[in-house]
Image (cartoon, rainbow, N blue to C red):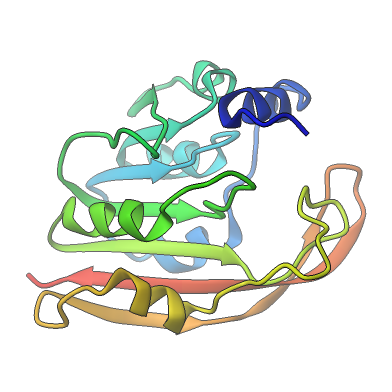
Length: 198
């Protein structure tokens, strides 16, 4: 594996054919009832979430470390920008920030990134964090000793003032996931939804 994060993720996305990707399950089930506004998609990857949000009236800023991913993602209501979240964060205020599977084999101060995301919310805005709670057979992370912090631990790491932010959801549901070659497996998602005080 390469030691450069940008090169690694460029290679991952270059190896995937451009396609019409599906949105993440937890995004659809959580956000469908929210009124559209301005959204930030951290680690947008193949763009399924950004496209789904834009199709429902959201104005989306989609960002990824990979220029390959960003360059593939363009469309009405979507602004795709490259950011290495280790050193820069997209400017602006948002009604929704999503971070789906923002997990990497490279050093990343996730707590700082996600705390910055919480502070980028407008009053009443929500931060949706969905993490892997297990490894799928096709995952790049096949370390048998991999640790998957749960939503309560993630919330504690953010150290947000409860007077300003409220945890609306913190659970670990399972689902049947489909890999790139069509194989399926049961996986666990850690879901954390935080709302900024209105």
